[in-house]
Amino acid sequence: MNAARFDAITGRYEELRVALIGDFCLDRYLEIDPAKSEVSIETGLEVYNVVRVRSQPGAAGTILNNLVALGAAAIYPIGFCGVDGEGYELRRSLAAMPGVKLDYFVETDQRRTFTYCKPLIVEPGKTPRELNRLDSKNWSATPSPVESQLVAGLEKAAPDIDALIVMDQVDVADTGVVTARVLEAVARIAKQRPELLIMADSRRGLRGYPPVGFKMNRAELAALTGRDAAMKLPEIETTASGLARSNARPVFITLSEQGIIGADAKGNVEHARPLPVRGEIDIVGAGDAVTANLSAALAGGASIREAIDLANAAASVVIHQLGTTGTASVAQLREVVCCDV
Image (tube, rainbow, N blue to C red):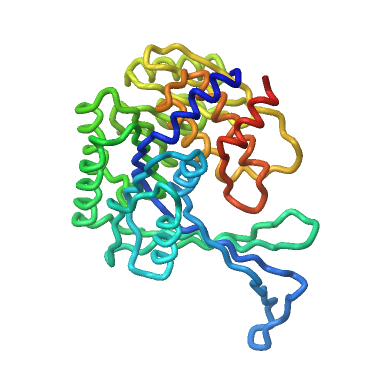
C-alpha cells in the first residue's frame, strides 16, 4: 500500500460513525511492587502491596479504544454495566474518550459490571508479569428488560451509522449483551440495510449468527464448520471463501504467526503474513485491534487486501506494548506500513 492510498483510506476515519454492541468490561490493573512485599501476621502468607491502580475499558471496550485511537467521528457503545463501583469507573472512562456517545449504554441494577482484575508484578528494567487474573462476570441469563433496552438502542442507532461491530465475550450463552434476541435484531438490520458493514466476533464461535461479516480465529472456524482445527492453509482459504459466498459478506480468519486470511463477498481470497517481531511481545488485545481496524478500513473504502494489511500493522503495533491492552493510532500505522513498503 502506497502512502497516497493509506491516506485516502485513513482520511475517511474522521467521518466514520460506528456502533459497537457487545460485552464491555472494566480492565483494572493492580501494579505490585515486589520490593514492598511483606508477610501477613494473621495468615503467614505473602502480602502483595499495590502501588498503582489503573483502569480502562476492556473486552468490547478494547475494540472501542482502538476506534478512538483511529479517530472515528462518533462511536456508540451499546452494552451494559452495573450500578457499582466498577460500573462507575467504566462509564467515566468511556465518557472521557473523544467521539464516544453513551446514548445507548445501559446502567442497570440487574447486572454486575463485567471486570477483569489483572495483578501485575512491576520491577524496574523488567517486563511486567501478570499473576492470576480475578474475573467478575454474570452467570445468569440477561433479564428481558435489559435485552429490550439493548435492542431499542441498536435499532435507534442503526439508520445513522457506517458500520456495526458485534462482539460477544462471555463464556455462557445469553448471559451477556449478545443474546439470541439481540442477534435477531442484528439480522433484521442486516436485511434492512444490506449495504451496511456488519462485523461479528465471538469467543464462543459464530454458529447461529445471521449472515453478516465474520472475523474468527482458526479454532473458532473449526467450531463453526466442524472441520479439524489443524487444517492447512489451502483448506482454510477454501472454507473462508465458501462462508463469504454463503453470507454474501466478508470473512476473516486470524492465524497468529501465519497472518490473516480474508475473503470478499464473492469468495475472492487474500492472505497476508504478519509483520516481523521487533523484540518482546504481549499478544493481549491484538485480536480486538484487528477487528477494529478491519471494520474501519472496510468502512473507509479499503479492499480486502488493504484491510488485512492495515489490521496486520495494527496487530504489530499492539503486541509490542507490554503490560497493557494497547491500541494503534493512524500515525503509528503509517510508520509501520511505510516501513514495510
